[in-house]
Figure 1: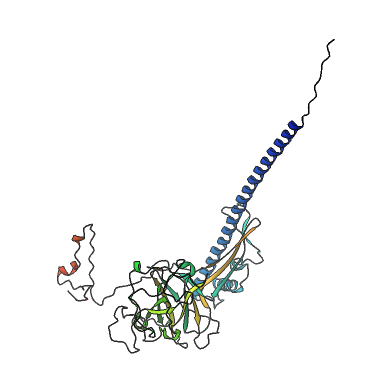
Figure 2 (figure 1 turned 90 degrees about the vertical axis):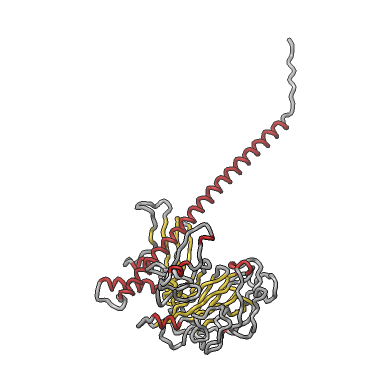
Length: 433
């Protein structure tokens, strides 16, 4: 009988390969699972975060409706009366706004003890469990902040203060408004003839030649008496100044819009006209910007954030009962700005804007994720009206000639005057024809 010979061999290598492959496969599987769950969690967190922001924005919109209702109550004169149900509701809205409590919206609606207000796109929509938990309204703010959108934009701000004031402190040109390197030295050929003169003339070049400089801002004051608006009086008392963002110093008390040192009707280019009673031209005033270098070369701004330029503009007498509208526009570039109200004789006095740009602080929630946003609102209760940068007026007739053509030879500069005896005016010369 033949015997079978069994040959035993070691399987350590094979076992090691199998174990290593299993570990590798497990690691890949676990890693893929972790990445997948991480992406899923990140996506879920993003959805919840956006939904929480949406909830906060819903709180802002509801707060704007409360302010609009309060404005309507003020216009109807119902805040000082309790003679009717509507007047009592208006008083409740005013008390809710002044309370600065988280349940401002609920209290304005006559609901008390509500910790949060649910947010849903449709009835029964509670998938993300959305709500805004706290909404406060601050109608009186320390400053008015904004930005000129472009060179055709003019901002008109009512100067309503919580206390008497005579001066507006203007800060403009945030760091993000200008390039990484700037040079605020006036362009070649536009140096002022007398740097010590408040109205030292600065020629304004083309925008293409302006380079990395700041902006020229146009500030104006339009006073009026609320008891009786006189258009002619408003026009004659309106004042405008052009402030050049540069590195030349100008004393703050020299920029005044409360007297005849600046005339809104004197064009900036009439530097050869006789001086007015106060002895000045209505031309660009250089204002030193502390946030930039005084060297005549491209340099980084001296500050990383905040406003580069600041000056004070006197707009009226401290004891004047007149209301004042403040206008602001920018040339050469869009400009962020901030306005604060001051008392020239008492700079430490705290003066807030009264109901001009209310601040709404809203916290929204989606499930267990919270988002908080702070918003400034204007023109509550009505649409913001567009204001022109320039206008044309005439005491007599005015003719317009419109031509649409793709050939320059078809256009006649004085075509309206060719009609003869039209009773109109030549816009170039001002002469009647």
